[in-house]
Picture 1 (cartoon, rainbow, N blue to C red):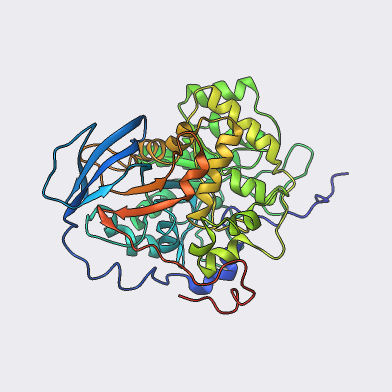
Picture 2: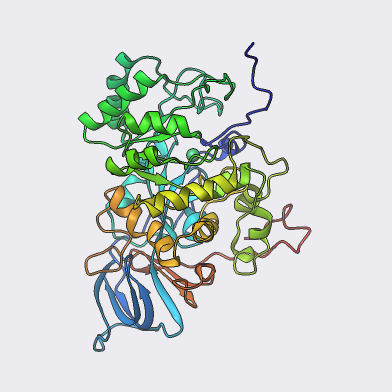
Length: 451
Ligand SMILES: [Zn+2]
């Protein structure tokens, strides 16, 4: 007899924290920093920094930024009539891109405070996307990350994504797929995000219904007909196999229930699909949360907003039984070794993760899984820009948007150096990094966050 699963699926991927934080929905990040700025920042010259340009490492280079874009990069550039930043001993990186978040509240301000200059959202209210989307094509100075988003996700009535109290438009059958996709694109969705969480053949699985495979297939086909990617939330290997064979462009989590097999690797590779790892959230829900350790890192603690601290340190971390951290890392390693693009993504702000800061943890997890540090850096810069069609981001090259971070030390050999942020620029303008007076050593911190 097949019974309800014995384990409790306190789920998410939309973000369990969404319900708690829904009250903050649509609160503008850093009011005043986004609105009135016009024109572009004049520019500067960075001299003698190590540079990771998205693909390769320059041991020492000069970079000129002007009018919001990178103008030139070379081993040596003659003095220009611009302020000079001494980069010796430091490393210049493209602004980081988190390829799986849920943005609301202070997300975009919290993200940029840790050098994440672009967030790729996998489910939020499209009203937020419409509000912030104009900034993506502007080069005006701002103090928030840019947002690209799926908007609403595709799920069945009562399915994952509906539990947060947001008015998610649902669908139930293949005939509804095309109008559903058309409505999302009309709302401004940049791609289509689908949830596929079927019961396993043994009857186990989440206690909520899922879209069926024919409807998922129809959604993927509708997205492709309209020139958009279709990316899919799965948590188990067999669900991943189904959606890859149906033509999904990406898995927005690596599956961590079972080791990947050769046939599935070949299916993903031959279709040129990619995978967003989200090892951060897999560890958090798999019983190996890092939030407490991150929150006491002296390179991080002073810069955590109250929202980030609350998200990193949940009082009751949920546990998802199919999230097995060691299997997740093993699968990331196998996919990467097979030449499949693995992107860095956190699924922030799920419990145990937070916007911006958790991407630095994700980079370290990718290295722990076997990526070289520069491959991990590419997974958070060049690769997401290429795979999501963000032409002027994720690299340091003439013409690229000047979203940059300068860090102490050499993250191309020690990935933890990404946390030692010296400066952050968005659209070529320095971002005043916000420091919070309280840190983990202060018992007053949670009650009296200081601006
Ligand atoms: Zn998610």
